[in-house]
Length: 449
Image 1: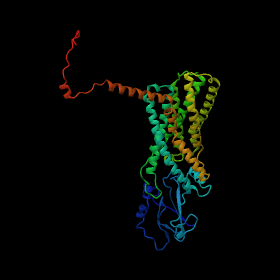
Image 2 (image 1 turned 120 degrees about the vertical axis):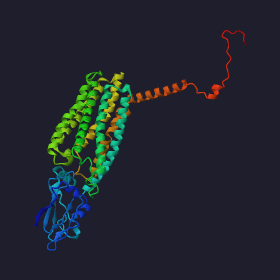
Image 3 (image 1 turned 180 degrees about the horizontal axis):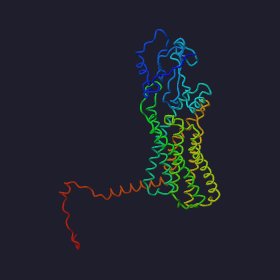
Image 4 (image 1 turned 30 degrees about the horizontal axis):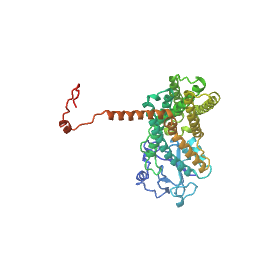
């Protein structure tokens, strides 16, 4: 039962950066001389923090590092045995314990402690699951990049052709804009994390990225959640528009589009502002609000999103019922257009609903590595390629869009061909200068031959 001590510089603002690498740790204590009258544990670097020479039989504590999932107001600790050797995780000391073990358990936030308990529930499989998570992050970056390209091309097509400027296409465009914002922010955050995230070996700790830039990081996540909520709202409007067109207005297309804009972009402002205010209050101790998606107040956003998914399924079932019961014998062009739109919705809405329900349900951390891998690859594939699927169904495979592009291409080809035929042949200086004169024939020349 030795004494307890803490480092002198744990309140220094520069403490984290002074202890960020093995080299800086060695430099810090290179002049320290071990007392001959007492046993000491030597200074050590545990790949996260630098620990000073410590008297034997002592427990030393330091402020927890500024890492996601750790509370920097709490303390990590190490134990130096009475023999002057760092004590390992299993309570032993000596050469087999190497540099000893740092107890970071008190540093974990409740959310992080919950995750760690689930990860280690089925044995020591956490490392394999972390490796799977890293590989799926690469899949996400690829998927989001493809989705971003497809969405931007679709928006250009919708804005380029006047024949596509109708209410339904305007709703598509707003949905695409919300998805572009979300995908762009995700790509920025993921690429920044890949370039700047600390390596536990100490190579990149202290580099300034978005994750450790106050206010900028929080602003990015607020904008991300706003864009996600707006995406769900415009998905709801897609379903509502189809539902009204089929069951309410009997194919009349005069809709209050500004009310859709207010719902699609204004509603998420209120929800996101409420969530951000509560999160800023309760997650103030967390760098960049890490783990906010694991908190109960995240349901301020997830609740309305889940409701949108359920409502869209109800809309879809009712639309199918009306089409089957009332429109079976009709073959007008308006009804055919609605049927085409419904066919796209039958594919798209369940796809989006299943994808987002799986995401809301959360990762199966306590399950086996195989189950976790299946969930991770499936969920992240569907989520990251979601924008590509929407662009494919609402734009690239849409008959009206293809007809507009084909018509524009034909007009361009006809214009180019006609213009080429109407251009006079260019004559050289030689042909102009030496063209023989054509004799003039009288208009009223009879018997000239």
